[in-house]
Length: 136
Image (cartoon, rainbow, N blue to C red; front, side):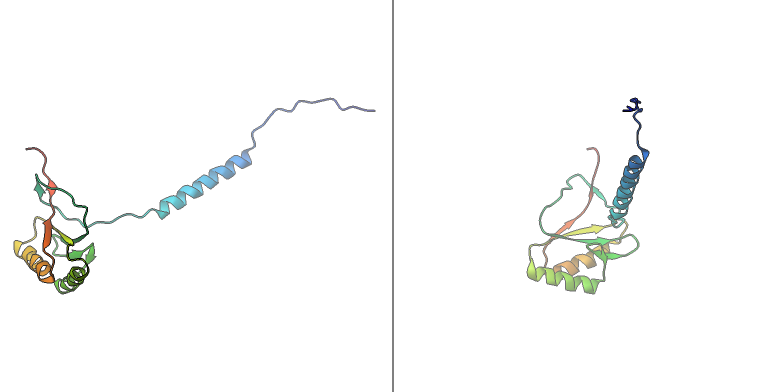
């Protein structure tokens, strides 16, 4: 009987499974990046105040931009549509807080128009938004 001599083979690292894992991770991260959504806000330069605080109650946000745009919860609107939406909210949740974000360059008269619209809709809790001021 002929016995083959034992020849020790050197261990080797298989590259194909490593390449497969690399591409799997690459695909995972690519899909992860594409599935991320960027939250776009409105560019409003808020005035600053030492007593600025945040609230946790039911709120609605009205924004007035420097260009004259009017937004309800980041959706463009008009004064008439704003009045209708706010009246509907006042009917279902009368204690809703209205956060008014007005760019500091917006005319005072425009802010008063929006404030009158909010009051006519039946919402009384209005808060003007401001950025905290640094220092004393």
